Each structure stands twice: as structure tokens, then as C-alpha cells.
Image (cartoon, rainbow, N blue to C red; front, side, top):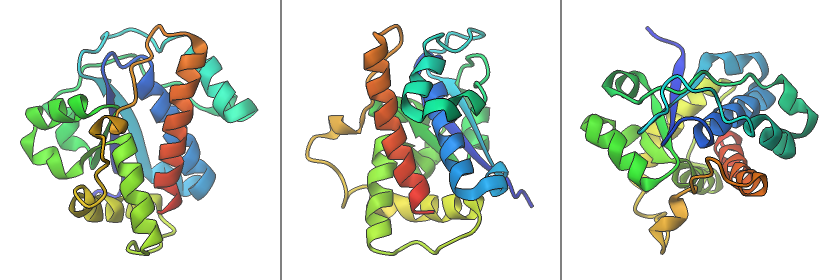
Length: 198
């Protein structure tokens, strides 16, 4: 029986937003669970990936702006890779930056619908589940995420925003650093909310 929980983070090129989200989620999980966080594997891919390209050189500075000196200890994600049916099928949770990317993932693997969310969407659902005390408390990051993913699909509709576009995190590849920092702060706020209810 597999004990590791697999999170796949998806954006477009897989060189800016998704690598930032991977680093931020790894950091927040470690901050909350310590060594227990190693039971969660966080990787990334892109719907139109710049396959083999390294992370945008701005990303380390952006992470430092968000996390401070601790950002130096956050491991850099791998080179960009294309999302495929194997990666989606192997994931326990797929987090995308936009609704369009969520649709692309579900188009690849229709059965992934129940485990695929935009980052902002899952954060909103997590906050509601936390307020309603609908999730069991857990000392395990993997068990907490498993419970969240099991509960979340039923709350898509009840928590849906008036403007669906608010679930998207804009593309910041090659954008000015301040634009990238703004996006990273938004991702960090959402991922902190997710980790906070586990």
C-alpha cells in the first residue's frame, strides 16, 4: 500500500508559476509538519511546457521576496516537463493555476476531475471546511491532504465565486519582478490556507 501522497502542480510553460507553487507548498508543509512533510511529494508540469528548460531565473528572487532568507533552503524544482496521462494518473491531487489548465488536465484524464482544482479554488474550499470543522485533524500531511481531497469535490458548487475568473492566477512568465512577486504572494496565501486546515 502506497503511503506517499503525490501532488502535481500544473501551469503553462512550467518555468514560473508552477515551480513557485511547488517551492511554496513544500515550504509550508515542512513548516507545519516537519519531517512528516516528506510523505508528500510535490512536482510540476506544464500544459505547453518549455520541455527541458530551467526555472525562470527570476524565481529565486521572487521566492526570497515572499519567504525571506528561508527561501535559500527551498529546493529548486526540476526542469520543465509536459503534463501527460501518466503524471495525472499517478497524482493524488492536481493543482492548476487556471480554470483552462484544470480543463486541460481533465481532458487528458476525465477521471481526474474529482482530484483536480485550481490553487485558489482549493484554498477557498479548504477555508470553508476549516471554518465548519468538517475535516479530521491529523498529524500526517499525507492523511490530511487525502481527507481534504475526499471532501472537497462536494463543495465546488456551494463555494463557487460570483466571478469564476477569480480562481485564476495570471501568467507571469517574463513579467516584471513585482508582477511575479504579486502572483507568488497570492499563491502562498492560498497554499498556506490549504496547509492550515490539514
